[in-house]
Length: 333
Image (cartoon, rainbow, N blue to C red; front, side, top):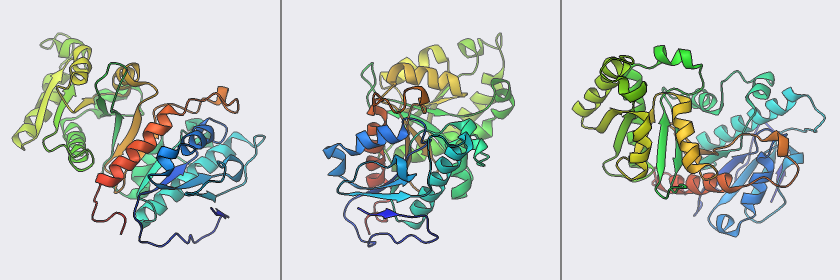
């Protein structure tokens, strides 16, 4: 294991490798990110499957172990300003993306950030998803919450068509073009990463009872139905709009491979009810797999040793699975 100072150049291991190499960013150092990362990396089942590069402040690094390299990017102390925590959290993400784009790592796993600290630290993005899109220079990204198993047994994948915005902004942001774009990203990810030959996707309704024929809104007829028609004509397997009060139950029973939710909370409320602690945030549309736990920084319990690493473990497991599936001719070269 090596501890690397901040440097303009990074000298990675030899390019040829036989198993995945994953970058893990520690998130806000005031939160539980460093703790859940350390607990996850202590598991033999993970260390036997991959090599890891942990990126964050020196004070937050996990214990030395075989197969774990650390890249310390800045000094940080708990007495530092909130902005310092946000700055180091963002810098870790920037470096991890640089490593991934250069092919030094095959996937990125990010621990949670505090959005207010993130912005105070000089990173003017609503969250990880938007920052990753900008750094990678891709035209579109998707935010998928994925759980291979849930509290109800079946798996569930939910894509949030609109992410971090006020609810009143959703009505203008939701367009047929945007839904088509999100469905295409979802279909590509399910084919390339999950190896599903014919993905089945459903678009969740925006209004109660899918508008009930226009009584409770016309977005289903004006926005969602045209998107479904366009996707079907292009050969995609897409259903909808299906009301939110039934679509997630039906997806859990295996009727569809992914649900596209029209706004953040309708998707997240259903997903976390079914899969909290086992869910993983996956960014679609990037040139490499990126995953993250489904929880926040939990600053109130940080440093007490009681944080549950289950979601971080699942995030790493899924990153490994996706790395093995994604462009296998490029990986491990």
